[in-house]
Length: 297
Image 1 (cartoon, rainbow, N blue to C red):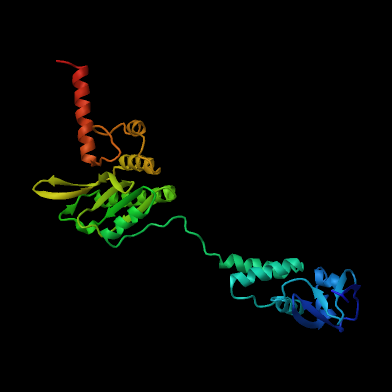
Image 2 (cartoon, rainbow, N blue to C red):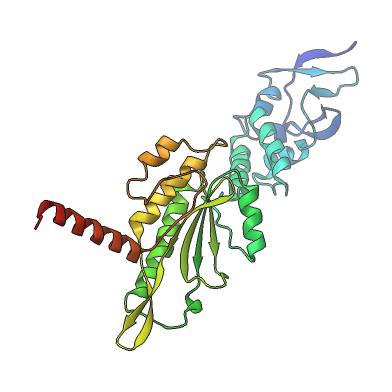
């Protein structure tokens, strides 16, 4: 504008100057502006840099003036309360860096870092109803793994290893959820109507496999509930359900290749249920047949 000119300004520390910072007007002393030697304001008002003035003697600074009052208070006192919101702190940080006020910039950065909420590694929904479970599965684009764990559903006493195996199932669920949380939706169900410990695996909104970890066993004249820990089977089904990440149906050849111990044919929509007792029975039958072939009578 007409009348604006650049000058080198150097005066006594008690001399007042008029500042127009982005349309905000401030009145302070040269001593305040030059109190910290390593700042841009110190260079501007100690004669080391030219400043732009208008016809009325206002020194023009082409920056936002919203937080310039905080900057002046920091130069006066060496400390200042920071704004309450992250947005305002970030704005003050930008101005502090522009004016090369290192201490104030560091205070703003520490405040912003302290306000950042830690992002959880993974979140496991704990469902409140079967309807909610179905909604979660249908709304997610990921395959799903659900663990039902309800120790109080038992009608009989537990075998000696059942409690330990129940804890192992829960620990495995936690480990798998940490490892695959970005690819699989993990859900924990503690309100199941009848199951004690059961894994369900879903792909494209449909149940594709199930691993039941409980069975009834007989000890003398009494029934007992046995909780097992079929770790290998659970790992296998978890890897199998990853085949449902894509919207298209899983490749049948790949499903067959990764199902070395499945019984019968594999299809993209069929459901398979296993228990550890059944696996042992199948393994035992296969061993007997092998021995019979190798040692014919």
